[in-house]
Image (cartoon, rainbow, N blue to C red; front, side):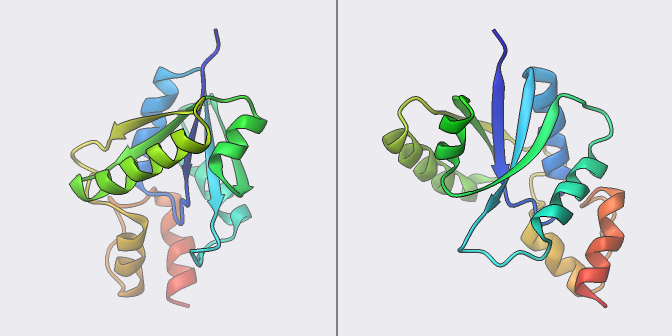
Length: 160
């Protein structure tokens, strides 16, 4: 049986924490769908197409992934694509409550969808896209926070 999973997020921008989790998922599952969520609640720095390109440029090792985007409920995407496992990354305790709430909402509206929480590796647990943008806008060093191919596009967006 082939096991496909969905790893949703804004990936605005993709960080080394995201890359670490994706690479680990690619070693565990047959196919990983990296789903760029289009949220009406968030203003994105990068367009969907730019994020797709940055993700693809950042994942040089694994080949068993695809990048997609979807506006709407992740569970609707999963039903439409016959995928039953959603994977969410957990950085620190502060993420747990939010992820628990989302997992239970997803279970309520789509009982066939299961959520798997994957812990961030210790060297990346503190990295978030929001923090990366804060460092970038203030001219701080981005090495060790985002993949090398993300540094210049991020600087161009935030420090023209």
